[in-house]
Image (cartoon, rainbow, N blue to C red; front, side, top):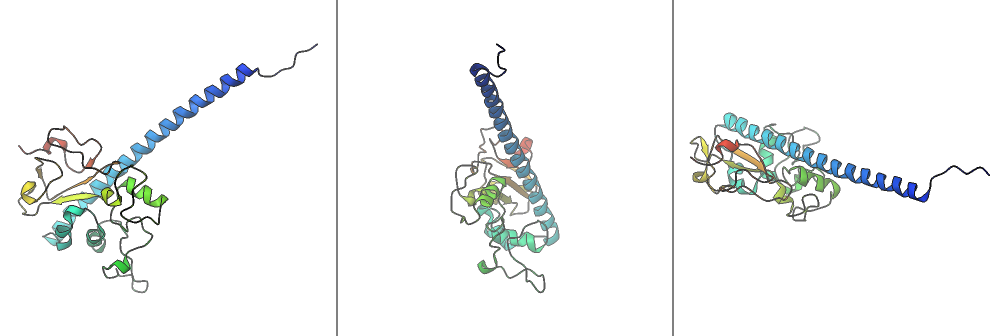
Amino acid sequence: MKAKNGFTLVEMLLVIGIIGILSSVMIVSFGKMAQHARRSDAQRTVSEVATAFNQLLIKQREWPKALLEYEEQGMVPQVCYVFQKHKLLDITTYTRDKKTGALDSMSDSNLSKTSVDRFGMLDPWGRESLKKNPSCNSDQNTIIGGTGSYKDHLIQYRLDRNYDGYVDSEDGEMPVTGLRIRGSAIVWSRGPDGKDDGQAHKRYPVDDNISWSLAERQAK
């Protein structure tokens, strides 16, 4: 009698096990790739915003009042409006008049209700959460990044308020103890945890993306 061709139970279990292992490896690899992509996006955004600050100061010769007033809150809508008005960043915090194409007046009623920039300029973790939950308000916990609210995922900045060529504690409260950077502005993203990680005793921020060089992050 001719034996029937087919897989034994042991062979089938072995194949299923191999497929499971390969799937797990792929999932982990995809997660790492996605995280790397978000970090790269955050660093690119931080660099673009830092450049925009420098261009604005060259153009205006002084910091606009809104930038100084909301400095410790980060890139909130009132700050983003300044850059939107001068066409220095690709943001849509405020809507345009449908007939003239001009920016509407800066008021809550003219905030873009659907843009991912409606709370201000968010980092990639905040934007991704908002895309998945478009009806969320600014105080709701984020899903990507785990902790904090959307305001914790706003791009942050500090300015050289006294125009001495450095951003340091003389200009106001700093995100890192002992930080003194040559330049007009520093910009950073708090990373996936929504927290400022830089401290004077640490060599580098744990997961923050920063616009300044690590070599000059601490005052001499």
